[in-house]
Image (cartoon, helix red, strand yellow):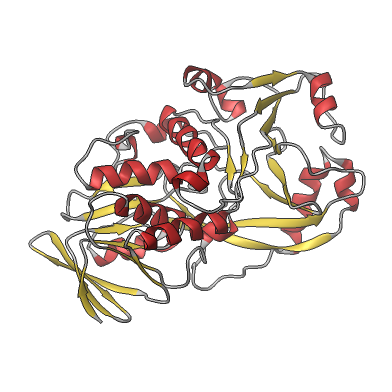
Amino acid sequence: MSRKADVVIVGAGVHGCGLAFHLTATDAGSVVVLERGCVASGPTGQSGAMIRPLFDQRVYAELVIASTRMFEQWDQVVGGDAGFVQQGFLRITDSLETAALGGDLEITRFLGEPVEILDRSQLTELVPMARFDDDEKGILFPRGGYADPYQTTVELAAAAVRQGAEILEETEVVGLRTKSGRITGVMTSAGEIATSVVVNCAGPWSGRIAQMAGVPLPIEPQAAPTCLFRKPREMVTVGPVLSDGVHQVYLRAMGDTVYRAAHFGRAEQTLDPDDYDRSVPWVQQKMLREGVAQRYDAMRRAPFLGGFTAVYDMSPDGHPLVGAVDEVEGFWLDCGWSGNGFAPAPAATRSLAARILGQQSEVSLSPFGWPRTSDLGSRLHPDWVHP
């Protein structure tokens, strides 16, 4: 294979396919997406895919709100079905302080997104199978929910292909060509592609891709275990995503009979994204069950149905690396989302596409530039990561 492309995107997760969709919707020329596996075969396909506008930085809230509008009109905007279930998102907290809550409600209100604060009696009525303390509150985002991460990504990919993109699966990037500080091509397992623009959407592999261009990125692949449990008879799955900020776990439905659960926060374990144990060790299963059972006693008796360990592309401050790389002209980043990448993806890639084309973006992504030019990372709360 020897060909040319105006833009080459590395990685066919939700960001790579979203960017291909938005670029091909404009006059971006030829767009090729390279994927070492298959579409959504990396961390995207295992995402919790939860959607809520609760952040302590305005840029995230703006992106998630804009993405939510896309999910609400998916068939008209993209085509097909993203599996969006808009049953609300409920954060349980013992404090409305930003640090404890994991987000700033003033930002949400300022942007006009509906939010309700529930007391214990209202929480008990909404979630009768859970236990709540007197000082606990619920923050309900009625327009929140979750999507199907695989469906979302394959629909974006299909729409991009309809608009002229090429998606080459089972095609690994083995090198990047540069000349005089500019991108000139991509070497793949199937041949070379001449191009002047490469966008690194490779997730846990993004550090390796950047190194091929001589750009060091501080990306750490980290383990992200998730457990699946049979829904106990006394529990229901109709209702909001249950995000417990007190016990640092979330619980959300997968259909009518299964719950998925995972912890918040960074993991200490780094790994090789090509060679690691994808199961959930017993000790982690036990810790996670204990975490959800502190809130939902019925989960102590819920049959364990298995689980998996996905991998996050963690940046040092937990925020993504998005934008042009000054050292290498034509090399762009969209990686390091640290477990927060799914919900903002449809709008973030729309804004990135505009920047690549030299246009003004809907939401400014400048806070995510690398190296950092602002103090965005210094305000990171340890409960930042939500799968």
